[in-house]
Image (tube, rainbow, N blue to C red; front, side, top):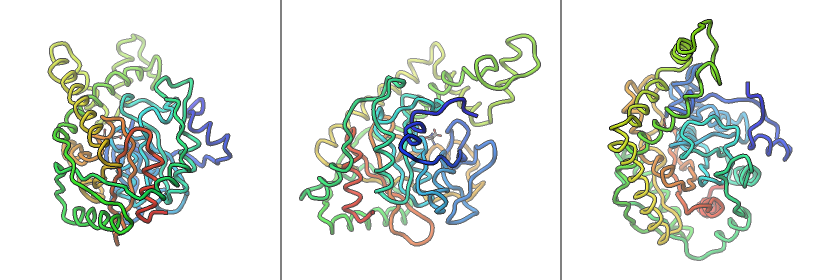
Length: 372
Ligand code: GLN
């Protein structure tokens, strides 16, 4: 039970929104399917034998099933966009610093942002306008005018808009590949053209993301020790409390990440893993900057696959690999909008990645492409 409201919740309440409840998610946001939730997986509204995606699976399922018009999720490496893609709704991962993280339980704070999920761009714009903006309680927030409405109108009227397709993109699934191209062609019909771009080091994003995310997690989760936060046990000696609370309280995936993150940060390995990952992060960020000077947005599938069957993914590495298209965006701190492609049956998502604070432009481009 949170003892206070997060900034985003406070702002929504002040704007007259009704908070209905909390939604299911992977423990501490660590997962791609929502199966690492303490209370079990959220089912996909399109096929109840499949996962809703993760980590914000509950948020996407409530919106996709029509229970709610809008929900919030958090995206450290894809956790808004992946469930949006698997469930067939719209999800926005905002620019780093656009939305206050005050009140969000930290997983990897240099990567994550809170963002909205909805069925329409207009609902998304409405909520984003309310939650975005500087907050004195989060020193990473930036005071930038979002002007969502103006920016959308601007893009709707602009003649030339160009999307970039990274030539390094390798899409293993035929259906996803075909869907991406049909979306690109329908953009073309509304006067949005495309060209090939290059992000030569994009392939290194996934390993560096997992090193950085796990390192930050090992540090952030140190506070759940039974003294400051977390469970309480009957032990009387502090170090016994620490280990029994942490042994009992965390799930398997969270423990795995704490151990790996602690290893990556340990003396002797720090340079080899953590610092190297930070360098890769800088390179990826610079490559995005260069490309986004040439095109208005980059388009890729949101996920390399459609929703998995519940229980299908047996090993963590296979699950991590599914984040290949989403994590580079978080390393670079950019905004990304996941849109449901017009397909029958199980949903497929495509994402538009933009320049910092270009959320309005991304929504405008989506509207040009026919999303309402
Ligand atoms: N699947 C990614 C991970 O497990 C992303 C999670 C997230 O964005 N919270 O780290």
